[in-house]
Every structure is written in C-alpha cells, then in structure tokens.
Image (cartoon, rainbow, N blue to C red; front, side, top):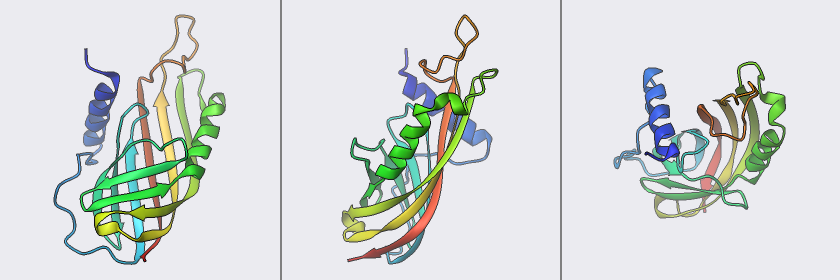
Length: 178
C-alpha cells in the first residue's frame, strides 16, 4: 500500500494538470540571470500531508524548488536550483495554527468542505549559493481548501486524513543582497 502523502501528491499533481497548472519537480535549469536586488513574486502549492511543497520565484531572479513544512520556530528552508533561502515564516505559521485551532468556523458541516485564507509577512533571513547574503521581506497570502470524510454518524471527521487538500500561496516583496 502506498503512503498517503504519495497518493495525495499524485492526486494533487493530477488535479493541477487537469486545471492546466504545472506542478512538476524543479528543473535543474533555472534562469541564467544572477540574482539581484528588487521585487520578487513567490508562488507555492502543496498538500496537508506532503513532505514537500513546490515553490516558484520570479522577478529580480527566477528559480524554483521545494520546501518542507516550517520548523517549530517557523523557519522554512527553500531548496532552489541555485542555492537555499531561509525564511522566518513564524507569523504565517501562527496564522495557520490559529485557523486550524478554529476549524469548525471554516468547515461546511453539510459537505465537509473547508476553506480559509490568511496573510502574513515573512522575512528572508539568509541564503547559500547564489542567494548568499539575501535579505528582505515578502507578504504571503495563503488559501487552504480541503474535503474531509464523513463518519458513520454523518458528521465531518476532521481527525481523519482529508479526501483532498490543497495549500496555495502567493506573495511579493523586496529583497537585497549584503
């Protein structure tokens, strides 16, 4: 039997493909331009149980890669084709935790569908490779949507693995290099 996260990632990829959205692993080839100061746009997509989310950054530089859920301190490490970027997303993690703490507020008890959004600033802390010396701030807006199974009694079972779940984030901000 396949692990649930593998099944959900494949289902997410198939769903995104049906919608005409590419959700492939990062290419080894990224933008030829060197990173520079300026504005960046960040897009990410993942699932609740995936070990990694996909990220694409455009603007002052262009690159793509993946990241795991944040550490307990809210630090996310982006693994891009030209290096890594550490981001302090503690405010985003707190906003997400707050939403999950009040899940019933966002859950349709008839359909077991769930949807919520939040925005939070994040700080680019450090980088390696082409991103050594990076710093800046971005504001990320995230939308989560999912469907939970119903129990035998007909109630939504939010303790079970969701039938489907997507996390989609977009944002922008300014960066510079030391």
